[in-house]
Image (tube, rainbow, N blue to C red):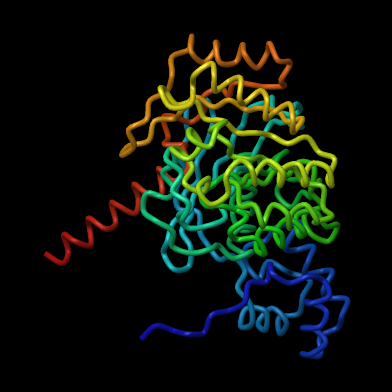
Length: 376
């Protein structure tokens, strides 16, 4: 019989929530600060590690809340020191978290050494034609605790290699990007709740300007995002500079075409005063023409945006190809001639299935095959 006793994640609680919980159970309010320090400064993974809390209180915490809602089960590492963590959730589904140990040359990340790419959903419902995340469909949203737990796993991984950083308030990464599995704005409340915790002094005290949310273009949520006071960055998965080309790659464009997407992006940029990033995957014969480059230049100029050109990363089961280096350079030259800020992303992690969802999809397929063999 499956238990229906699902505990609330401790990571969903604000200091006010925690104080109210303590008051209701007759524990002293000052314990809340101690607990938050254990959670976000020392990043413990077991209740009994909170050594300055009474045993009775640790027992209550264990009965009332979940601590880590997932477990890190494997890490694949590429020669370019890009690492993909495969994480198993409490319902046995898988997600991916990527740690990129490389100086990022995109806007706002010039001094980066470690960037963590986190997932926000199990699978994805938006079916972008270059992405493995949605090949197995959308399963569910991640909880705030499951999103935060990915960062805890990265911290613990780094602590095993550099023990001196254990229990150190300084985090072992410089940037966080919501560019992993799923559409972050389709899980709006959990993602924004996570960012508030990351940014708060009582949480991880992580600078909002080093946090980037990526979206495929959910216009209503983008307009809502524009009203958020936290100064995070926004990256838009554009991938097509006309409705014709974008609709081939991004099905969401049929619902929110460029005529709606671009004004929403402008609204965010104007309210936040931050330079946008336009993500643009170059796909041979689909969106790599010089005419497309000129259209992209026009959009980037209107939005005062940086363009991140991404040569297509091969995904098993998809038919796209990447353009050759000469074609990539010719495309970039058009942007350069229009004085558009841009970069061509250097390939990282190809040997470890680093494109979104590939490792998780392979693991799910292996498990399904084993189950079929058992049934036979």
